[in-house]
Length: 218
Image: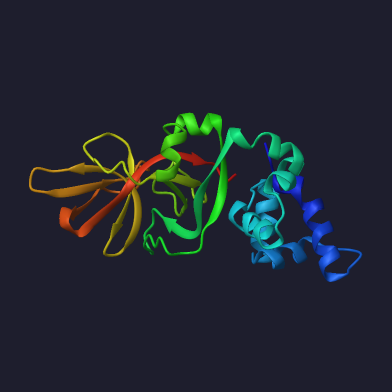
């Protein structure tokens, strides 16, 4: 399993060159990533990888995320390009516990999806319909965990089909199972049994799309 310890040495070398220091410490990396030092230490101890922050770190420096995480050379990646495709990743958008909306004008990055994940999410032709955002909170555990990256197919909006959907409501963005009732209202159902079912009026929600895949953040 890929953990924070696997990528720290390379990140420290990069930052050391940038700031002209011989020795770079964990707290320096935490500052560069914009993560509180105590939070960073906890993530390191638990083996959790702050993927959104690392993606941003690589994007700003035009570093290959595959090189940083897996030591794959750029040349080898070019040879395998036809096996991958990019989807938009909105690193600043979070869903599941509310507090936000899906803004397609927001800044986005790219996540490379391999053939295996493409097949799981409907095939190469569907990739143009898929965007990625983050999960916030534990309401969908054990299916989705806090910090997971989820992939939303914007063309799959039929909530009569089983599955998990991303929806925009008056109070924020959520990821839930949905059940349309005979009176037109919709139940928002969490997989975590400690959360009760919430009911909203159908006209008060916008179905963004169906969750077709996820990446575990830890």
